[in-house]
Amino acid sequence: MTDRCDVVYVRVEDGDDDDLLVAPVGTTLRAALLDAGHSPYTRLTKRANCGGRGLCATCGVRIDGGETSPEHWHDELAAQWGYPRLSCRIELAEDLRVRIPEKVIWGRRETDG
Image (cartoon, rainbow, N blue to C red; front, side, top):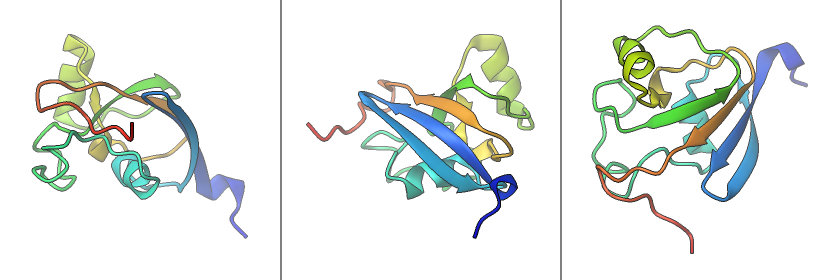
């Protein structure tokens, strides 16, 4: 049985979908999203990305609730210029609400419809 202190809840807004994920503390947001079938990538960047090393800036998400500790150089740019945060650099420590934004620079995201 998992203790509530060992997991976080992540509410994900992904287009028209609104989903609640449960992930172990310490998991990266990118890994939790991908494990649950919510890709932060576009059709092109799903195959051409850095694999979660914080180098390509293609896994951006918006944090709409909860706190995450900014620890990556990109976080300063995100705060200053309004960029999405990199999901691969967010280590889950407490409950969050995130939104996967529409991305047009690297191609539109795939939809099921």
